[in-house]
View: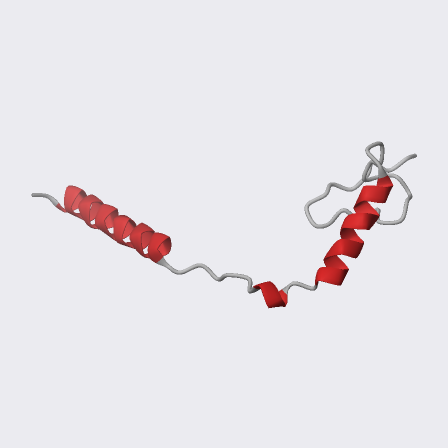
Length: 76
């Protein structure tokens, strides 16, 4: 057996072991007492009051739509 296939087999085994460890790792759970119900309900009311026609680039209260939202196009 040459070195190339042996290294490939070793890499495949290492990858399978790593994937197995990642999949069997326990996931953190959010305890119900960690949720601030009043703040959650206030946020839901705010979103519900905005309506369905609101767009992220509208200048309205709550226009911060979070990370990952593209910037609105700049007007020249």
